[in-house]
Length: 466
Image 1 (spheres, rainbow, N blue to C red):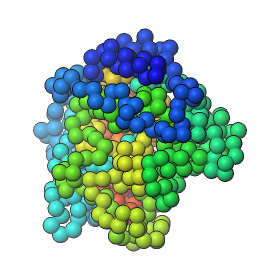
Image 2: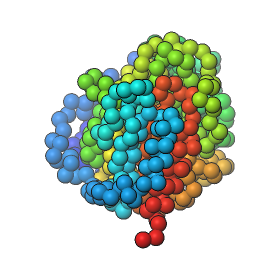
Image 3: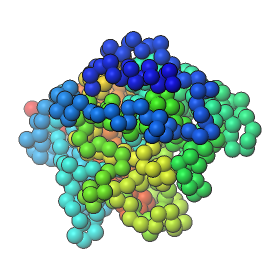
Image 4: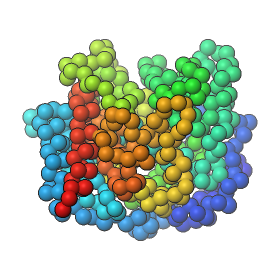
């Protein structure tokens, strides 16, 4: 209770969305000891423990005023980015995806903001996509929500990157065999963020778990598939553990924290978990679960692989999980069991919302983070050998889904539904590409050819001699 009071006091000492430079006074705070966590009944803090859950915002106008200025400068975008836009239009024509929304920021200006296609490719296509259309971000939830939460907690002295995660999530010490695994004591927050914890990539926990607590217990006790720090393997399971830990440290849910500390201060209009029911018909659907399924949000590699033929599916089992069209609700089945609010998937946003987020990072994190924190989390890790991972982010590999031009200081992430965000600090550039490539099923991987061509065309347009 003392730590929860300290955290509440630290958030109330400063205005909404103000810079965290004043948060140095919290540098001595650390996550609550494991004995203070009622592990047997609270896997994620309940709403009764969310001290800030009902704390009113200072007002939309106040939050908008503190957001960094992103100057609209896309009046000539059709001419400047004609080649890049053709890549997207051609991809829609070739049925790579039905809908797309893009945003490009360059040197503090929003130089492109464009929507393409209809929310489905069927005749009639439903609604045309607009700049206000929300997309299921899938694994972009990891860097935009969960990792940014980690960065804020780190700045406030509440998170030690090299501390063992079991100190906050003691259930992690025992795997599903019921026997303690001494290697699990070595797993740190840094390893989980860098995907080097030794946890496996993905498990269909939703097939057995029928409640939030069931799924989290299964995630906490998933056996290690490798020794900690021995290799990098992208893992949804690791982010389940991180999400639980961060919610315990902050004493409030992920969505509440992110809305107050990230989305509101950055004026990321519409960015949310679980979009309101009235908006769902206007959101591009991501799956028809009456068809064959591939297993949502199976980990996405940054390094491209050859796409499967459009008729192929890595899992020929017919989906009976929800057995309906997935529209305006999270595509990932594990996230669905978690109520649509999950640390690995579940966030919805617009291209402009992500552009505002990227713009803040290009400004060194202002107004929610310090430049040194952004640099720490977005720099490529030195271990394990050969990793391309940063903390919660990825960096370009060879070849890369970011294309051939993004520099060595660049960072980004992909989302299984066909989303991506790449940021190049040296160019002061960000490129957001949102699609619903998984509609009506996830067998079409043409997005892996589209992304690098699109990114290359954007940079070539910006660096073309005038």
